[in-house]
Image (cartoon, rainbow, N blue to C red):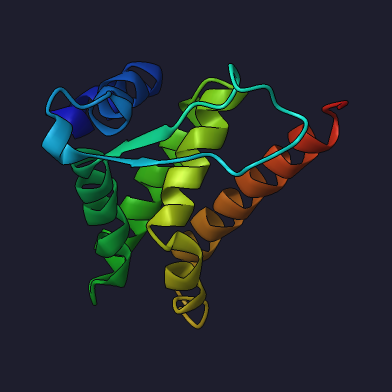
Length: 145
């Protein structure tokens, strides 16, 4: 159902999937809390723990794990889905958080293992993924501290 929504309207599809991936957990047992790194430049009011739900880890982990299948069509479609989610994520903190969630699921090492593929569409989608990552780096570069 979510894939149909995503193909019909990528923006709505991102909202549907991100509500599952990024929604705070209602059950405390399913939530892990990690304190933010200590920094002398942040006040105690600004230091809030980051919460990661188990559903969030499992859902995104399942998507990323599809990149390791032996079926190239599944790998291509998975990367198309990931690129579409990144593209339609609101710019700024939400997109950064989504990319951090992908990093936490080891997407970069997973994609590095796929570099030898000869499939043209997979290579194109990999290029699009790299562009999204570089655009995020450029956006962070423009932030003045």
